[in-house]
Image (cartoon, rainbow, N blue to C red; front, side):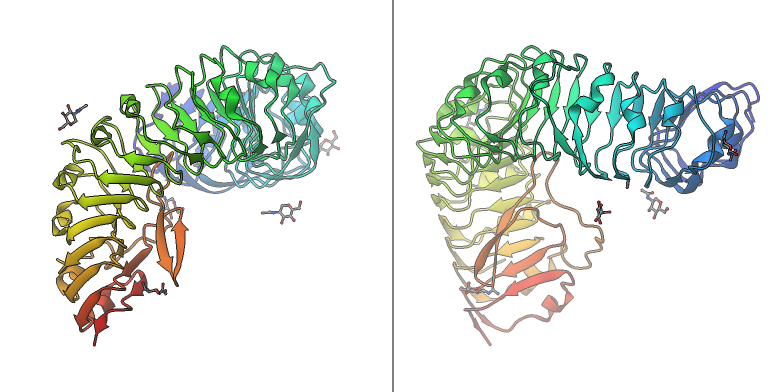
Length: 550
Ligand SMILES: *[C@@H]1O[C@H](CO)[C@@H](O)[C@H](O)[C@H]1NC(C)=O
Ligand SMILES: *[C@@H]1O[C@H](CO)[C@@H](O)[C@H](O)[C@H]1NC(C)=O
Ligand SMILES: *[C@@H]1O[C@H](CO)[C@@H](O)[C@H](O)[C@H]1NC(C)=O
Ligand SMILES: *[C@@H]1O[C@H](CO)[C@@H](O)[C@H](O)[C@H]1NC(C)=O
Ligand SMILES: *[C@@H]1O[C@H](CO)[C@@H](O)[C@H](O)[C@H]1NC(C)=O
């Protein structure tokens, strides 16, 4: 007990265990967020009458908490309980109120009803109730919270159509998140209402059918997400002037946008993140002039012509699933900050420049699948590279595998299927410590075979006995203890490979880390199938057909 203690902040440490009962009646600020604390919220916390700031978010606290328990904490100004395993309930018959509340942050607290006391907390500046089980309409009291700056209701099961005009009293609104709330939003183009303070607006998955016209009067907007809606047709001209000097994040993916990609020439000096994927954009995209661009996603449109080269600041560039033609310009190697390059599923041809192997020290995904590249695989991979996924499937590459692949110590996925690569089985790949997926199907490998998750060696000319020793080394499969669904990949890019199941090529867009198949079909392996196979507990697919096994 520290009777005089007024403020205690241990935010973002690695504290574990229970929060013990304690007596520090003077406490006005108790901040324990972002640790690994578990167990119940101790009773003594509900007795801290002087408490103004209580932060317990992002721990692993559990239990059901009736909100009435906070009734003695009448000075509460900020309460943050998000992201634990708590279940919060509100008693609507109670008359309790917390008139001093400014911040109420209760995301992911298993809440099924809106707090009843919002009307009695008129000073609220920040209200976060995302990732809960809220249903029904947004209560009217929320639209009356005139001081609200930040409102989060994403990922709930709300219903009804909300006219955006309803937020007109919330003139200080800076951050609004309604994505995936199951609401439908509508806008009135004739209205003059505006929200000049808006900084971040996330209206993804809100059943929106048009560009919100009020955005013209939001000059401070930094982040705008309108993805996964039903916006149709061309991007209106006025839209490209929205927040011209401040917008840095724009996501318009998964709509029905059409028209040419001419607007990609717009000289917006600030854009950092642009996602226009999954639309119907046509035309060429030759000039990408944004100087500060970091993330550019043009995946799944109908863009034609040559491969555009974005600014050297770009770290993510995907223009996969379009109709690009021509060769890869050597200027691609000027993108020295690239981490992810995805040009898959186009009609690009020519040779792969040698510089592709070492132009960026941070390249982690290189996906050139399903194009018409020919020539040899670059041999310029150098020490210290961080390449994790190399996918060259479905091209016309020939020659042998460059030994410099051994410098790719981080390699997890190597897909060279459906090319014309030659040589004996690259036993030496075994020394790559993280390799989990190796696909060599339909090449010209031959000879005998010497820790992988998905092994596809089908349609080659491998011969001899099945490699028992090799199966013994499939440690990634044997005794796999992974219960949770985990996916290989990283934040911005999910690995995918094409796995042949029942003769159909199926693209596994996410590789579940326990998905394991072995396809040795259509070779000339002979004699017996080893008992070791029986130990591959998490094996999901095994194809030994079209061999000479007895
Ligand atoms: C969180 O607590 C639950 C039990 O309430 C436990 O199953 C889980 O493993 C804990 N998670 C972490 C990350 O400690
Ligand atoms: C709440 O207030 C109403 C009217 O002021 C009163 O009738 C009711 O008894 C109060 N309820 C409780 C639980 O105190
Ligand atoms: C969401 O609400 C609808 C009714 O509005 C209901 O039919 C549906 O089951 C709910 N979904 C979930 C996941 O609770
Ligand atoms: C890439 O490798 C080639 C051949 O080893 C070398 O000449 C070149 O300087 C390297 N480039 C970079 C950027 O490291
Ligand atoms: C096994 O491989 C053969 C030849 O490659 C193919 O025809 C067959 O469809 C495959 N079986 C399954 C179940 O994928």
